[in-house]
Image 1 (cartoon, helix red, strand yellow):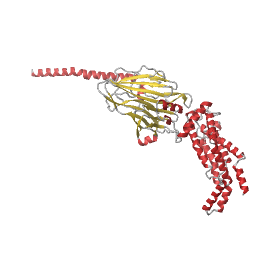
Image 2 (cartoon, one colour):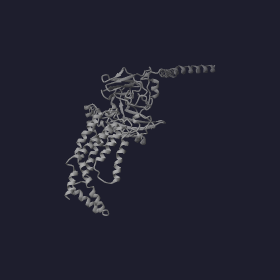
Image 3 (cartoon, one colour):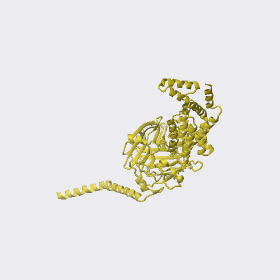
Length: 580
């Protein structure tokens, strides 16, 4: 009987445990199973987005670790079209990344497809920008690159901004409003509302993520890479510097930061009074180098029933000088123009770039603009060039006297120096008279050279004849008769017509320029210069070669006029010699 009572009690206890535990263990497990099934069904039924399935997008989702996005009802990702005056592309509600933005006014090298700011869409290199919220508490569910936002918006235009939302089902509701202007800037207003019972600590963040193949190298001619105007100073933080240090951090109030290519820029512009930590970091896997430009705000608390918002602007476009300056004023952001690599001669290069753009817009041709600007600069520098030529001409005609003194005082350097100085004084010649005007001209000429290299207006701009793109080397190679002969040339022998014309103009200029010395070795070295420059300029943009050639031709014309002038210093020196 006691044993029967014990069995009854055990049976009753087990029954109570089952009754109590069933809803907790089995029903929760059933919910989890249903969620797993829903996820599997979503993965097994790919959603096509711009030719890419949701399954592929989930596999390729990058950065930001998965958090606790919870949804009882499966939400399908949709694509929102970007269609403004200068931009087109797609924003997917899966992650809300910016990685598919095309420039309507610029074509790829094949001139068929529009330029993609984030690289060609079929490129293996991953490049995107994103923003959102982070927390020091890992248990807070936050939207990430795997989150599917909800929206009723279908298209983003200048007149139709979009709004997307997401709820973490744990007390936080997120809203993102995106608008686009008629140029290259999108404005993003991120809002978070705490409808829970407890205060939540958050930070706002931005990220620009870029991957390169291991063997990738970028150009040396103009700065390309991570940069920013941080705390009142331009920071150009090269890929090599980031690799060397692993991570570079800055603190800033306002400013801007991003990644630049030669012609294109992706950059975030925060609120001007925002205090941020901006970091540039590098990681690597077996085949790729991975770079991130991140910003993090100071931590702030969102109290129950409180809503917080943060505003960012993101520039996705071409580095047009007028456009960058316009945004500098419109968004009250300092030195946004420094996204263009003006170099050390900023005080000269920027005005010259504005002048070139103005002339190009006036005459309707970049090639003609280069020629006209070169002519204007030559005319402005004419007094210096004339003074330099006169000084060199005088030096030429006193060379016999100096050589005679060198023979006479071969063993007495002091007397030789005194005697030469007396000749200079007697003839009114300064030994640096020919060099100083040339040195004063050099910064202007090099500044012009710089802007022709960095100017986006040169890109795909045609010139007369066979030049279809002033930003590329001359395509008609002399040694294979412009491609008529069926063989390829090694790089150093790929010399076009314009580089040869440039070298010939340099040679003629040297033959017409009065030699400052009769040393045959020096004369031979000078004759080698045109050949060396021909090889050097062969691989440079044809616009630069045309500029240099035209500049040499103008110098030749000036020298010819000087030689034929009755007031030539040569005649003056000859008369002076006859009197003695």
